[in-house]
Length: 153
Image (cartoon, rainbow, N blue to C red; front, side, top):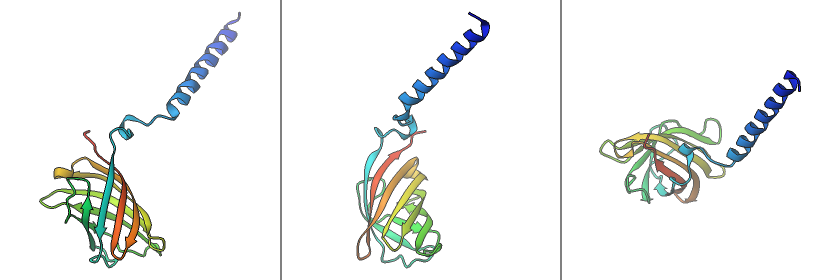
């Protein structure tokens, strides 16, 4: 067996092992995104104080997250309508007494459907992460359904 044949065989074996590792790991989530830790998020908010201007807010009327009690507010830093037909805004969740979290919400105003993601916070909301589908519930009421966790990193 020549040196070139041995090198080629080793490269082939190494390539096969790498492909096998990729195939085995393709269906698994990274530890930081593990679904085992994520909990179900249910929030209802009332938005009569939201008129589409920067600084307007909605008030949480129901929540299954102890750190986001009823009465907490969601402030929107960008006005609705730009780009046309969308709300695409940074948000601040204010749970009172210095407990806040930040994120972003994007909503299609025509369909009443959207997505909000929360990336971190301070106080009781330190490490809070959430991903929620937004739906219009009728009138001024909106729902957030998704997952949340408190990242301990």
